[in-house]
Structure formats: C-alpha cells, structure tokens
Length: 202
Image (cartoon, rainbow, N blue to C red; front, top):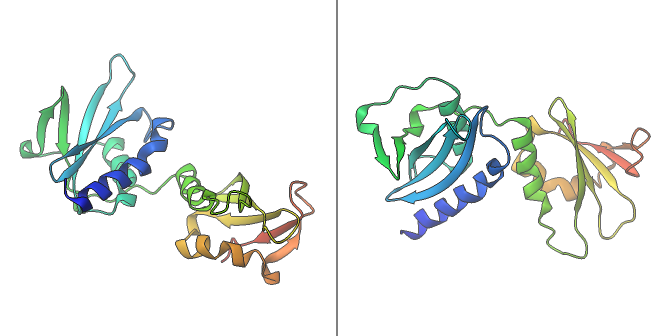
C-alpha cells in the first residue's frame, strides 16, 4: 500500500472509532474500516442485528479529507440514494457501493461528535504529570464547559466554548486565552471551578 494511502486509511480508522459505541445515524452502526486498492471501505450495518444488512461504502483515496467522511456517511445512510450499476458490486457477502464524495453534501456533525473532536485535541496531556484538560460538561445548545488546570497556577478554570464555532485556532490558543482577563468572570454558578472564562464569542 502506498504510504500516503496507508496514512489516510489509519486516519479514517481513528476518526471512526467512536462510532463503534454511537450510531452513525439512527439504525446504522459502524462494523469496520477495510482497506481496498486505491480506496477505503467503511462497513455500515443498517437495521437490527438479525434482519439488517451490512453495506461497504467505498470512498476513493484523496477525493475528500478524512474529517468529512462521517458527514458523507450520515448523508448517505439517512436518505434514499440512487446509484449507477457501475458503482455497485459484492465483497465478503456484502454489497459494495462506490461513493462519489464530490457529489455529496456532508451532514453537519452532531453535538456529541463536535465535542469529541475538541476533547480529543485537548486530551493529549503532553506532560503526564500536568494534564491541561481535566473535565468537561455538555450544557446544551451546542455549549460545552471545559475544566482545565494550568500546571503553574493553582485552581481549576471553567472555559465555556460554543461547539458550532470551534476552530483549530481556538483549540490551539486555549491555554493562552484562559489567562486573558477580558474573558474571565467569577465562577459563582459552578462549584467545580474557581474561575470561569467565556470563549463563546471568540
């Protein structure tokens, strides 16, 4: 396998792992991620265990960034789709459906998926003795409170973010932003932290 294809395949595996516990869409669960020549195949089981069917959705390599694949799969499994007979085949007793991602508008990531993306990015401690992220709380309306602690300062900081506006820049800047006084306020409504930082408008 080409090294770039191997890297993309591994990235897609990591990205989809949490769907082993959470359905991709109602009645549709991840069963696997399988390498194929020039593509990745994602096994999705639709229906209950006994009477449902498993499909292999094939996505050619380098047609879409891995981050868009869950949204593409949600779009495909949530509604009626029409496929050319050239795009349908069989493998391992499953129907293979070759997708054309450039023609599919990905469904937006649900709140839990957005939260997972942020938490994964922040949960790598870097320094095991002084982890930055020590807790979180989903608050509804796409708000999440992160509980963080600076290794050089006492106390716990609660940082409110809006998941729909979360960017890579915000995640990378979070350790600095929690120190800026313009975002800080007293933590009177949360006994789990000493200070609150409101980054919902950042």
